[in-house]
Length: 260
Image 1 (spheres, rainbow, N blue to C red):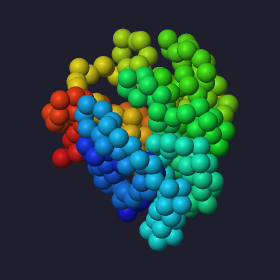
Image 2 (cartoon, rainbow, N blue to C red):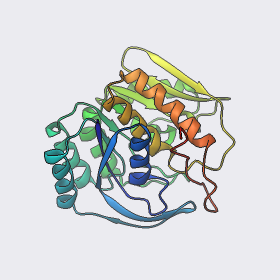
Image 3 (cartoon, rainbow, N blue to C red):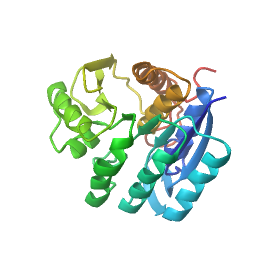
């Protein structure tokens, strides 16, 4: 069985972060392991409190998994401080895999910044060069590329700018791009690919970004080529939204085990 390691924050509501990642890995038949970077008090309505773990404990978790269980793919999520970003970035080349998916968690659904500018700069300079795939939403892509995204044309410009920071493939998720369908823009430095799907009228969307990146990582661990890993992840997330669970008073969780 293949393995995947997620380095991210927890979600006490279970719909996002580590919990969503592990569910996604399991749904793909991949054994999931984790290194928790932050503990959050969170539910479908929002985040109520956050406490970051020490850099030393994060590194110890990663090494404990890598030294014993093994790693076929890595997915990073919430890395809240420049110090955490820097240490995780330095760890990645030592891990026994070349499949690294970076979900640059830095902007909340409300549009509020979750990371200080120093941490965002560390993501640009230190983390993205290690990424096989980076999966920002449009708001995060605006922050990384330093341009406004209001169309597929400007998304293409942003994808080029982000690609120039070093990742192998850029996926700008289309949920916040003003198009009729939800169009994810994929750029590998050679060509653009538009993955289109209908916008789904559902409130059960908590953790879609985490789930998408984790699905890409799981597919890479299973040996799929990068384009197939990305398109497969888009299909998986769409079905998980369709089978979303009606929990909570806000944005409910996805139905990660819809195949069952």
